[in-house]
Length: 165
Image 1 (cartoon, rainbow, N blue to C red):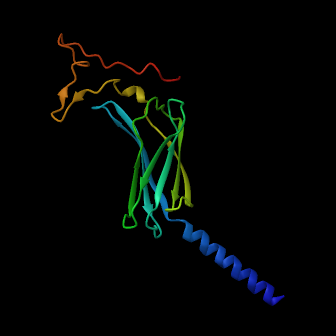
Image 2 (image 1 turned 30 degrees about the vertical axis):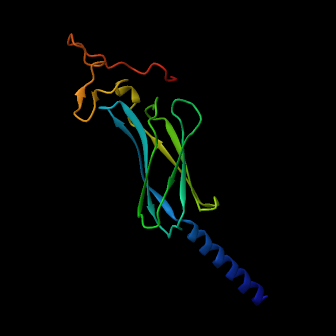
Image 3 (image 1 turned 60 degrees about the vertical axis):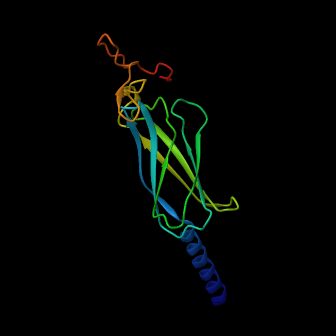
């Protein structure tokens, strides 16, 4: 009986160590970034490294599409020396205030095997309708966009009418 108890204890201890070793990163921050100058909104998720990351590791992130389409997927190579990992989506449309949006994150090794999976939720405290539909400025010199700032002095900020209510 004692031997069975010792084997079971050892198996549980090894399983616990294995679970801890699987935690390579943790979510340290997440936010929607609204850039009114260029009329864009993106997801931004940061991860802190909590364990050794093997060479050749990739991160695959799937962001909910606020406009209602298929998830937006990015693949990023990450390097063992990095302590922080930043994941940014392409531009998104139709972000709504107080609506939960999810990001599924998967770390995979060089052969495609899953090392770790995470899920986080973002909720914006503002609606994307605060953004103009066209960039306010153009180019490196931040020239006023003539499609927004009209020669007659009027301003057309527009709105994205294609978003679900």
